[in-house]
Image (cartoon, rainbow, N blue to C red; front, side, top):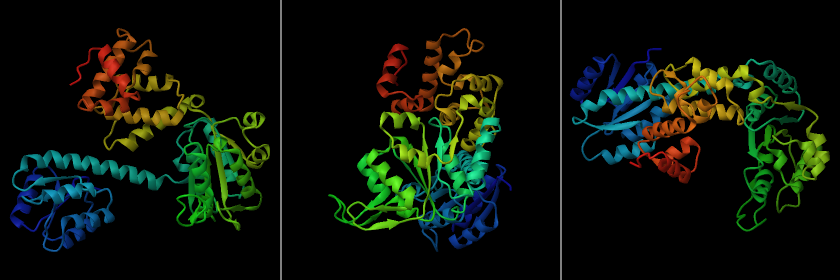
Amino acid sequence: MNSKNLLIIDDEKRLCDLLARILELEGYIVHKAYTGKEGLTLLAKHPIKVVLCDVKLPDFNGIDLLVLIKQQKPFVQVIHLTAYGTITDSVKAIKNGAYDYITKGDDNDKIIPLVAKAFEAADKVAVVQQQQTAQKGFDAIIGQSALLLEAIAMAKKVAPTQANVLLLGETGTGKEVFAKAIHDASKYKESVLLAINCSAISADLLESELFGYKKGAFTGALQDKKGLLEQADGGTLFLDEIGDMPLHMQAKILRVLEDGTFIKLGDLQTKKVQVRLIAATHKNLLEEVEKGNFREDLFYRLSVFTLHLPKLNDRKEDILFLAEHFIKQFSASTVKMNADFQQLLLQHNWKGNIRELKNTIERTLILSTGASLDSSLLPASFNAASSKINTNLDMASIEEEHIKKVLQYTLGNKTETAQLLGIGLATLYRKMDLYSIPKY
């Protein structure tokens, strides 16, 4: 597939031909259409990644055409060509998914860099979509360590059965990925997989979300609502962090496991469902049973098939595989990790497991300006842990340099900088004062 295919849709033939000539000189393969219908036909025939489209066409409004283009090829980036007085329409189009807009005749010098950036964006979206399509089931689990392969083998054995599964492991070890893989390899794969985090919402909301309610069950219950159990009938329900579920709800889940029945809030009638339950927790449930925080009967009901997911520090040989996977996910261009960068990844204590690694790679790609990832892009804690790298810098100097780089990337936006650094805004201001960093 040629990565340089571009489509111009404009009923002003002279302008269309001029733009085509400019872009052809830059090495693009340009396809021209003078109506929206003609443009959609060409889009279907050719591997087009970027479209320059007039806002006003004889047969289409450009904003309406944008919707059809995205439906046909979601990764395609659309740049609107706008005449004076139609900029408002283009701003609206950007909100609906257009990449950008340029004013006809006045912005010819902006076309070439804008088109180049649009191609980069199209490549990035296409890669992510291909990965999401290709990586189904156990193919989505990255790594080759013995511990991981053992967990995958166990999961593959239980997947085709009707057994409920309990996934145990630290936060960020991939419990949700395993749950999806088990679902995709089961007889329920053609039905839905629904998930809820039992620790993320209040007990009252969790109960109504899981079991649903009848109209008038409580203030604000203006109509009947199906809960996740009912919605997942014939499929799979993933209960993440079940160790944080309140005791009174544990009794209701136990009943679902025993006979597949439950009662909606405010209802008197029993409902029956056929749902496969996959539960997960980072807690030691036996200890929670001893403390009186978790029902013993529910624990034994859930733990018929228990799968322990290894933490990342116990499968260090998978770190570089995962890092490469995340680089491909977040970057359209070819980016390599240099030796020092790889060494620091291998030496780091990954308390946040795969989730921490994913966030680290995403952050370094944001800060990177070249085709190579080096140790200077990693947070200060990584560099400070190595005696081989930056030996002439103390930890404060490394931190100061890192903050400056992130501020430079965000163009001085303190809120965004604090988010990227993983610190509070007040902490950022305090460190900027400490290191005498200008506040722009």
